[in-house]
Structure formats: C-alpha cells, structure tokens
Length: 107
Image (tube, rainbow, N blue to C red; front, side, top):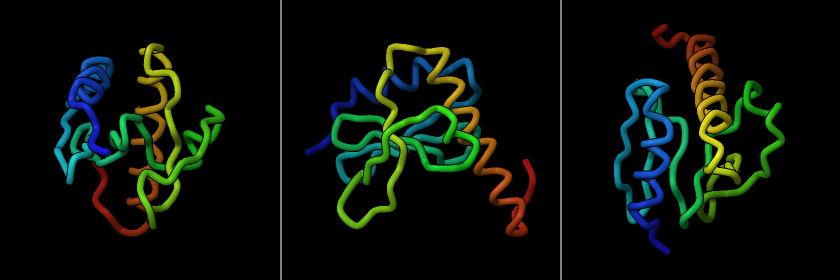
C-alpha cells in the first residue's frame, strides 16, 4: 500500500525546526533526510526511523517497513512535535557516530 503524501508532508513540517528536512519518493513510499542524512521514512502510512542506540531510550515499537527489511522503530505519536524532533535528532546523531566509526566523513 502506498503512503499518502499528506503524511510525509506533515512529518516534514513538524521537523522543519531540526534543520534541512527533505524526502524522496521511493516506490510509493518516502525516504526522509535530515541535513542530508537518511534517517527514516514513511512506509504504509506510518513513520519509522532507523534503529541506533541513541534512540532506544524512547521505547518505540519495532517494525519492518517492508518484507525482508531490517526492523526500524515505529514513531507512534506524530502529534507530539517536540518528541518527534528529539527522536529525529537522536537518530541522526547515532547514525553520524556509526558512520564515523567506519571511517566516514564527519559532518
């Protein structure tokens, strides 16, 4: 089932205070980027973020966004913009640390 574009527009609008938020359509779903870092997406009309140690503290349920995918965290309350912002920032921070440990460039 394809994700309704209004969901990703709502998420992007809620996260605009975090920095440069972009999303790209991908086979009926949307990948979401914060300051150029892919950190989550809208899959089957729900919003998920990548799993990193920094966002485990939020106690989010796990969900595979599609068959065969690694589990991600399902962000279950999109109406709480401050919490959504905190989750997004923690996720990107964790992804940048993970990338840097593998020899990636620091942002």
